[in-house]
Structure formats: C-alpha cells, structure tokens
Length: 345
Ligand code: DAH
Image 1: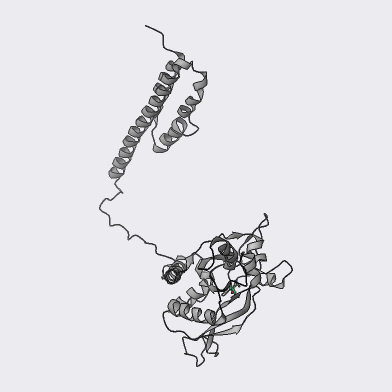
Image 2: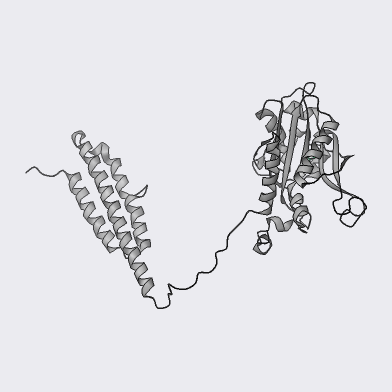
C-alpha cells in the first residue's frame, strides 16, 4: 500500500481535531466562535487553499477536493451540533418552572411612518402626477453647489444668512435644498421640472422655530418663456393640491441671490379667511415660501443659455408644513425621537 502524502495526513487530522472541538462546544456562542476560527474568511480551513503552490502539481487537484470536503464536513457537523444545542435550550426553558408557555403575550408596539415622511410622500405624489422628477441629492455638498453656483460668492453677505457646518475636507452640510439646482440642470436636458426634498443643516442656536437639522423641498422648473405670471399660476395650482383646498396667494418682493425677481409667497390665512386672527398675527396672510425666477447666473452655471431658457424655483419648508398640518408647536419635536410625541401620529 502506498504511503499517504503529508498533506492528506494533515487534513485527516484536522478533521478529527475539529470534530472533537465541535463535540466539546457546550454553548451557542462557543460554537459560533469556533465556526469563525474554522470556516471564517481568515479561518483555518479556507486558509489551507493558500498552500496549493507548495503541493506537488500532480496532487493539487486531489488536495483542493480534500480541502473542500473537509470544509463541507466541518460545516455540516457544526450545523448538527447547533441543532442539538438549540433543542437543549428550548427543553431547558420548558423545564423552567418560571416559564409559562400559556402566558398572554404583551401587545406588539407597531411602528408607523414619521409625519415628515407622510407629508413628503403626499407632496411627491402630487408633483409626480404633474410630471416632476423627484430627485435625491447629497447632504454633503461642495461650496460650489451650495453657494457659488447659486450666485453667492464668498464675499457675499448672503452667506451669513445661512450659518454653515463646514467639514474638514472643505465640503459642507448643505444649508438648503437649492444646492441641487445646478446639479439638476446638468443631469437633465431642458426643459424639465423636478423637486428635491431632503434634510438641510444650519449651524445655529435652536429654539421652538429653529432647528439645526430640518427638511425642505426645492422645486425647479426650466422651460422657454417662463414668467412671473407662470410662477404665480403654478404655485396656486400646486399649493391648492398640497393643502387640499383652493388657496388665495400673493407675492411680496423678497431677496435671494439665486432668483431675480425673488418673492415671498403668502397664502390667505386659513383660520380667519383673511379677517385677521392670532394665527396670522392679524395680517390675514401667512408667509408660506420663498420663490422666484431663476437668476441668469444660475442658469449659466447649469450650462443653460439665459437667452433661450428661463425657470422658476421655490423652497418649501417641509418641517414648517408638517407643523402647520398637525399643529406641532415646536420644530425640535420633529427630529427629537421622543416616542411620546411620535406615537400620536
Ligand atoms: N434656499 C432658500 C433658503 O433655504 C430658500 C429659497 C428661496 C429657495 C428662494 C428658492 C427660492 O428656490 O427661489 O433659505
């Protein structure tokens, strides 16, 4: 009888050794760590394959098959041992006098969508039905996309309107969803329409109406011959759909470097229908969102010729909309993770 090669003896011994270790594993955790040592990525058995170059060429095939067989055998033995241990655990639990298999289960606490997600989904459905893309852009942005491309150079005082979390890399946490505007212009051929909802960040003190992290929805429409009349009419249609009733709106001038002209859009107070009440501070109108016609410099940054293409844009405060819809008095509740608050929805 020919003598067994060394590697064959070694594999046979490994099989015996692992078998003994597996039989000795008295708990599931021990079995798991053994499994990692034997079969894990850096484990002993996969490691055997690295030895192929040292095996005589005529034996290599047999060696590979033997390692594979060892691996399959050890895996099956571990699985069988696991079954035994699990069954023993169940048996022990059933033996335990304090374990009552007939006890009534506590009701499961089911989760549900966060109010921000609910309102965002509603808004996405409305815009999708009107032919808008729904886009998701990064929260970590370049200074270019968040500021420069939006006609806000470094020296511009508007930078101070949005206190910024800067990263060591020179990137920043986007301060507004407007940061997606120029990205979208590069992503889609004109004309197109899109919204981009998401989280934005401001490095500022928090109170009932300010939070360092909140949600916005940016809207952008690029087309030929876009006018303020078109903006006004689109906003009325969109807001009536979002608020589920006819709304009366008005524009007041507002300054934002990336739109010209820029506006603050007000809606007729829904509480007093314009007579003046505490909700609207007796004005009859509520400030809802800023908007405007896209500034030619922004169009240029997006690779569009302002002679040919125009656009309108708006920035909707999603957090504010949620607060209005559900009567939430403090913006910090939205991201605070307090179940007493969240379970009310
Ligand atoms: N990005 C602005 C902010 O967060 C809001 C804004 C104003 C967005 C005017 C717009 C706009 O699209 O046209 O304060």
